[in-house]
Amino acid sequence: LGITIFKTKKVSQTDLSYGAMFSGVIATISNPYFFIWWLTIGNSLVLTSINFGKLAIIIFSIVHLLCDFIWYTFLSFFVHKTKSFFYQKVYKIITTICGILLILFGIFFIINFSNF
View 1 (spheres, rainbow, N blue to C red):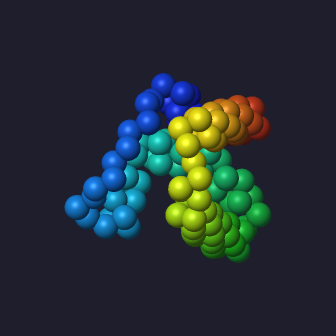
View 2: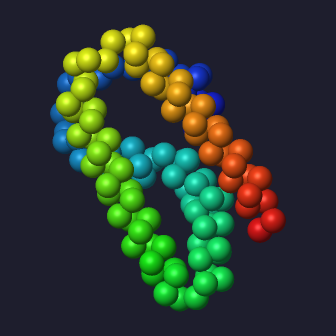
């Protein structure tokens, strides 16, 4: 995912005939990286939480869902409030930083969870 950020061009789509929530659900379902994440990193995190017992799995699930909800709420609010400030150069810088961070996270998880 981090590498594809550098390979793709920005596509602007301003007129959607359906809602943003529906678009987000479809994007998540059709995104192969969602399944790849759960088969690799997500699986490693679940296996690690199993070592701590059934309660740890429940806590992991709740915390994971809460973190997703908080992150996506923050992200959508931030993008909505600042979209008029982002010019093409700023957008490119932000996506480059995000791509680098995703690559670094990937390397981190590969190194730390390669024993599973």
